Structure formats: C-alpha cells, structure tokens
Figure 1 (cartoon, rainbow, N blue to C red):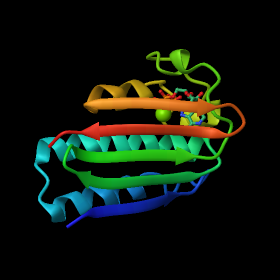
Figure 2: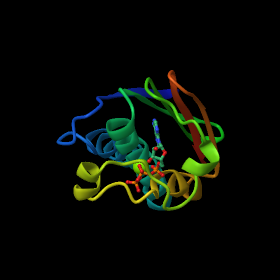
Figure 3: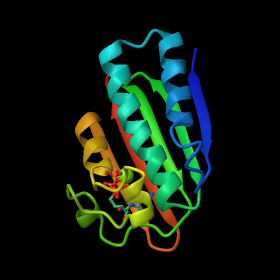
Length: 138
Ligand SMILES: Nc1ncnc2c1ncn2[C@@H]1O[C@H](COP(=O)(O)OP(=O)(O)OP(=O)(O)O)[C@@H](O)[C@H]1O
Ligand SMILES: [Mg+2]
C-alpha cells in the first residue's frame, strides 16, 4: 500500500508550532517505523515546521513511504533564502528577539535537518519560497 500524507503548516501561530511534527510522529508509530528512524524524522520535520511558522508565510509537509525510505518534502511560500550557504551555517539566524525569547533562533534548525537525514536538498527562490527534500532510510 502506498502511504502518502500532506500536512498544512500555518505561519505565525506559535501556539500550534510542533503540532504537525507530533502528528507525523504518531503516524509513524502506528505504522511501526523503527524508533531510531522515527526519532530522526521527528527532528527533521519539527525543525522544518518551526521554520515554516517563523520564517515563511505558510506551507506544507508531505510525508511518504517509498522503497527508498521515508520521504519528506517541505514547501513554503514566503521570502525565501538569499544565501543558502549562510543559512546552512550553524549559529547563523535572522530570527527576531521576540522569537529568540521563545527559545528559537539558535541557527541550528537547517544544520540539524541535514545531519539527521540520509539525503538533504534545499532550493529557494527569493520572494517565492523554499523547497526542502529529506530522505530517511529505514
Ligand atoms: N522556510 C524558510 N523561509 C525563509 N527563510 C528561512 C527558512 N528556513 C530558514 N530560513 C533562514 O535561514 C536561517 C537559518 O535557519 P535555521 O533553521 O538553521 O535557524 P533558525 O530558524 O534561525 O534558528 P533555530 O532553527 O535554531 O531555532 C533562518 O534564520 C532564516 O533566515
Ligand atoms: Mg529553524
């Protein structure tokens, strides 16, 4: 059976931030995904979700199980990222003080996604949005 789900992420709503990645984790538990894989996907989708809430105007997270593994695609509409190399640098962040006071904005989300995924690609167009692909082998 082909398993494919799409989850919408709303921008700006910090009270709901984390809900989608929690739902994805529950879904994986039901599917019997090994705990070590589940943990890595949970980290990747959580960081992606928070970035959508904080940095974008909203988007979606697609979850699919393919012969290669767990395939996650994150697509948003928003300002995009002008310098991806900079954005991928640990500690680099444009987060506001308000966001930092909530405990985010360490500049660790994207590096964390890359570290946890077996494959990671990011593409972005300024003024359009950002597109991230992560593959987690089972
Ligand atoms: N979806 C996005 N749209 C626009 N800009 C983004 C997006 N995701 C990341 N960025 C930019 O890349 C920077 C680095 O992102 P990263 O997730 O690594 O750190 P952060 O979100 O600032 O802090 P942390 O993830 O540690 O809470 C962000 O500060 C922001 O400037
Ligand atoms: Mg982040």
